[in-house]
Image 1 (cartoon, helix red, strand yellow):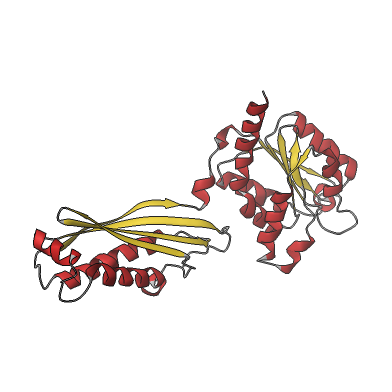
Image 2 (cartoon, rainbow, N blue to C red):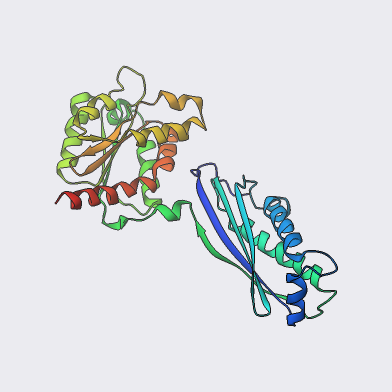
Length: 305
């Protein structure tokens, strides 16, 4: 199975269809009048489809078991064709496209099995995904190639040259995977005045996103939140609440992070943990979703003009 533990849970939806084609109006009449010898075709196939959606991961090896929180199955007659539609919802880390298609396939196959004694020419002509929503692709809604990003590593040991930087480079790689390039990368000491100076400098140069990594813990030299918070003009507490919630599902120590986030001028400033793992997990929790902030901010600016 593909590792999905780094993904964020979100509402996932998928709609799939299948087409069952019969050879005569008499077959349609038998279905609608519930006179097919094997029983009520619509209700039996609907029950089979519901079961198929729930059991998808049992029969398709690479599918993840997931909570199915809604399934709707409908039949629509158009001439000699019966269109089966299956809609599936889940709040999870991976999509429900296969579940919807599996449900459509088994619904159609159950209809085929029930109709073949009275219609030897019945056939399943099409099974396809009609629509899907949710997941990372839905939330990448900003021209990221136009955004300027800066990454700042706050570490006494790294700035002194006694340790290598891994967290900052991991953040840069995460930005790259989200289509964002880093045009400024710097390493500074865990010093209140130095951190503030660097933040003011980057904000003055109109960087869209400024990411500090390091100095959010409880060591006496961890002063990044204290340095950044007084500079923030509009705080966005929910950003780091989301990051800590995401981290808490993976380690009980995530609650100890003191990161802050918000706007300084038009720059979104984020403060991440200094550990490589903590920085990576925070990036996974926030990107690309946090980019939507710029759409909201742009709309607010226009409304105030």
